[in-house]
Structure formats: structure tokens, C-alpha cells
Length: 292
Ligand code: G1P
Image (cartoon, rainbow, N blue to C red; front, top):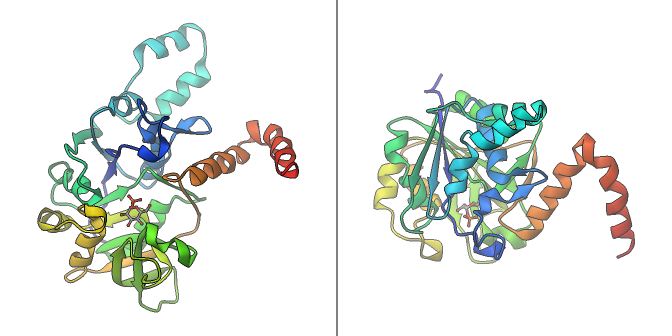
């Protein structure tokens, strides 16, 4: 069995300019899908996969993320005094144990690769996961848990991949995979945000990674790539020269909450899954759609 994946890195330093003015004072990771912030979904996915230590790479203006994963004394005391035990229990269940959350800052917006590199001292010399909070994967078994299954079988590095329409590949990291007959593939090549019409396939990187710590050395030396940023994908391409890279085509539906339409779709999909909301929401949605 390869070394266990105990730590997960959440890059949350982005400015969220696509969601202005909502993100002027509120970090985009705190935008809500139904009644919980985006970051809570990915943290829950990580914890369900057995992650013990959460590492947030933050930036200025992100204090509410720290607060969200802390005790809210005043609020919780008030809930207690009012006998709101359900709400209190929910907050307690979602709160990570003291000492299992770390924060570090990406001081400059130099790209995803640089953000991950900023976590090097907190991760140390062990394999780790990276989850991008923009991407929600709605699945019976969490995407990271499915990837850990692949990792336990194959070791090395593992990325989540999925098919998108060809005309969308330029928005993502795109991989080329060897023929395989299961949900796991050997990744042969990858490119970050290929120009339209040049992608090696329509399989994109979904925003979930299991990486070996050697990636940090490569990120340190990584030159800027697509968009003038230090790209994680470029460092992974170098890493593949000496280590295995497995692509996992996971079961589940992805919502790219970095885009407004993906974010809105996530809200509808997660709400329709909620017994306390679905019955009320369905006729409203039908009416709205019928009127178009
Ligand atoms: C990042 C990664 C990209 C990946 C995408 C998934 O891009 O660089 O490889 O496909 O996340 O959402 P970003 O969305 O930060 O531009």
C-alpha cells in the first residue's frame, strides 16, 4: 500500500473577479450553494475521503474562511440559549477538530502552481491531495475517495479527468491518455488551456489531484505558462517524466462554479436533492421554464 493521503491543499487565494460585485467583500469560496459555502462542499469531500489535515492557501480579504472553520462563540451561545439544538449540532459536525486546519498566504496572484507551492512547508515530504473549490463534484462516493482507490492500487500521482464538449477544452487543462479498459488510465501528455482546435483530446483535468511531494521542487523552478501564470499542469508534465500519472474518470456530475451558469446549475441540482426544498422548488422551476 502506498503512503496514506493525510493532507489536502485548498487554493483559495483567487480574487473571484468573474463574480463581482458579489465577491467585492466576500471571498468567492464563501458563495453559497443552497445553504453552505462552496468551500464547505470540498472540505466535506476531503474529510469523507479520510483527509486529516486541511491546508488553505489564502490571500488578503479571506479572513471569513478562517472564521467559517472556527467556533463562532457568540452565535453558538445564542443558539444554545434558544434551544436551537439542530443548528448547533450541524455547526459542531462541520467544524474540523482544533489543530487540523492550517492557513498560509499566497502573497501574490502568480497562478495555481505557485499557490500549491506555497503549501510546501505545511505538506512536507508526503503525498497530498489538492482540491479546487471552484469545482463541485456531486457523487454518491466523493471524487477524492474514488481517486484514493486508484492511488492505493497504482501509487504515484492521480488526477480526476472528465469529458467536455470539444469547444470548451480551451478553458481547462487537457490530457492525452493511453488506451485503457477501466476507469483508470495512464496519462501520456497534458497541456494547460490549449488554443481552440489544438487540444489532444476532450478529456479535461477536473480540479482534484493526488500528488507526490517531488512536485514542489518542480514548481519552484517552473516558468510561467498559460495566462502568464505558474501553472500546476506544466509542473505535472515535468513530474510525469519520472513518476506515474493516473487519470481517473470518476462517477459523478461536475459543476464548474467558477462560471456563473455552473454555479447556478449547482444551486438548482443540490436544492432538488434536498427533501426539505425539492417539493417547493420543482413547480417554480417548471413554471419558469414553461414561460420561456
Ligand atoms: C484550473 C487548472 C486546470 C483545470 C481547472 C479545473 O484552471 O489549471 O488545469 O482543468 O482548474 O477547473 P482554472 O480554472 O484555475 O483556470
